[in-house]
Length: 235
Image 1: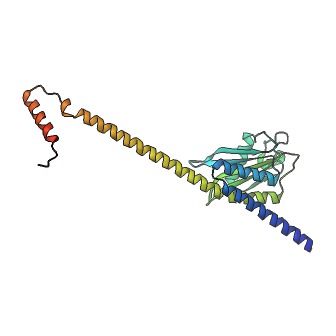
Image 2: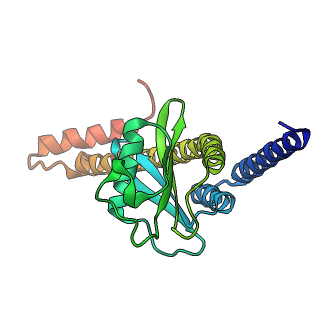
């Protein structure tokens, strides 16, 4: 390899590091979940020339259920068809690795799927893994006119997804804790109100004046009890 080629590869590697650093910096500056995911998708679309991107988060209580949280798109307003998205997501979750499809219409792994007249000809899907757990998937699609994703584009996208997943996971955890704290405060407030209500009902129900008695002897006992109860002396 010539010196010129070495310098070219070195410059490409430097550009990749700059891109990764810029994306991670933008993601770190975001504080809200949807803002973080919007940033990830926007950056990936710009770096890979994708027609559109999708982030799906897994529901914690059901690993087989996906929730589409946000979609990003530049020129293609159409969403990835449900059948295409679900089959690709299922494959990635089962194999737990990056999926690269150059030609969806002729990929033996997904017989029966259509690129919808070339709108979703090439697909890239990457699991978002944090501490050994898959928290979601990031998918990118390109139309036939743009051609398939290159290996370098997929490698760069995979690095960015991996780094961003940890940041997103931390924000999701903080949001979950904040929500649980709100529920705890609400429960404590309701419990306090319920205790106050029950105490008020008991005070009314068992007040001396509400005890029904017709005999003079019982009335004399209640009158004496009221006087004793009003006396703060311990004797």
